[in-house]
Length: 428
Image (tube, rainbow, N blue to C red; front, side, top):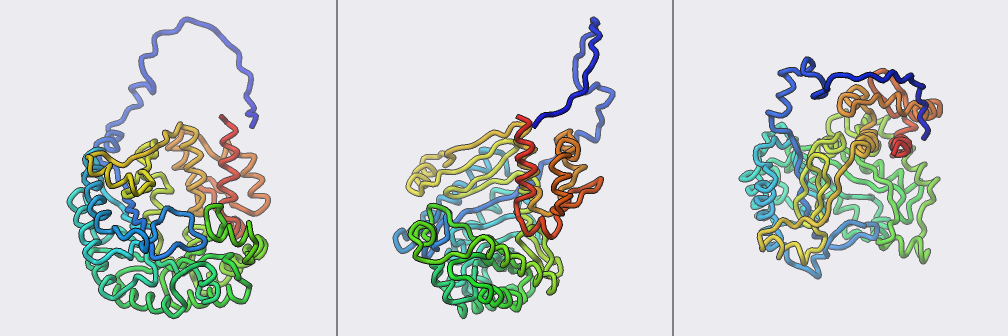
């Protein structure tokens, strides 16, 4: 990108020493509060175990049929919680959201959850009922007793990986449950929560064997459950997945074309609007606007977060950090008294701006005033060219205070964020 710079006239002169910037006259007492107060953060806890590996999964997971070692992992995880809180002085920071992800967190037994939550409470300034505590769930691992224990521990949001309500498609995706078991799990969770927690259902658009008819039926099944939130992820065939091998390389199974998947999502958006499921991100819709993932929303807006468990990652200030992805190394590292950190990355100022734009646009609106306050630049000025193009093609609307995705912008997912991010990258 070429920036147009107005020519200036130089007038050399010997000037007095400039001792500081900005000048002392601009300093204010209220600016101390940000430094004197502990900054809020989020916590992520990774449970890598699964009952089986789904054909589309590309995450770090361990098949419990081969590696039944949950008990030891939970003990090491609790030790890591204490070590991380001490090492990075996190104990007094307000926790805005906790998220248990995986893998399959609900594969843990009741006493495992109790053990981990007790450790979090002992080492962090844990939150009250007004904050969000989310746990990912899988239909086959949902039970009445487990859901009741989670509710007692303060969990108030459950995210259930259903992916489809069509048995043929479920089987092709390598999932272990069927349609009936999905309904059963949702019913158990709704009764155990007693209206005190929100339930999210994950669906995948573009799974092998999906057609317009099966997609419409599956979507209607999800809506008819009455859950508070429905997330629609675009299925992607990553090179390390089973679906890539059978659907892309060997062409044994038929994957929907890009145009078909786009039609699936467009139909979903129309049905969500008709049934008053309102988007808070470009892929998650909440009933009457009642629920959103505070963990995801906060970290996409740039809040610090710390990842606990094998392969988990986090961000403290301008530094990304990640644990080892090797389960064989995780335990001995913890037991030797060392944190299992394996790699990291330090953002420069431009990269921080790029991250805030790319991730911030996922939340449908980007606060221009907050961006300027944080980074010192007017995004609408430095990105005026792509913003005009995106607006003219009806991907966004732009006001004095925000950039907002239109329905077309939502349909195309990360397109707007990536377009602006790519433009900013040219400033290097």
